[in-house]
Length: 95
Image (cartoon, rainbow, N blue to C red; front, side, top):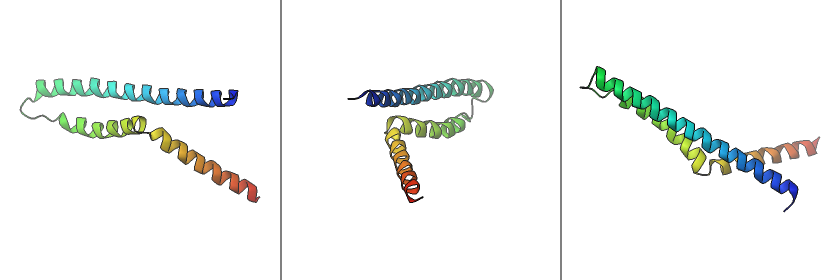
């Protein structure tokens, strides 16, 4: 393995770690805000659980974020980047 390979692997590892940290921050914000909404809901109108609506809406986004981080979203992104690089190389070769 060359130094260039090591540098590239470290760059990829840093990017993946950053993605996981961003998701954890998103999850903590979700738990904190929605916990507050549930408390507010129970205090102000215990007969109707309206807090479920923001929880569901935000939960869809949180689920999508989780899938992009933990279900090989990185691999999809890398493939798209490689496709674009290949297109750019072909375009450059035609000029």
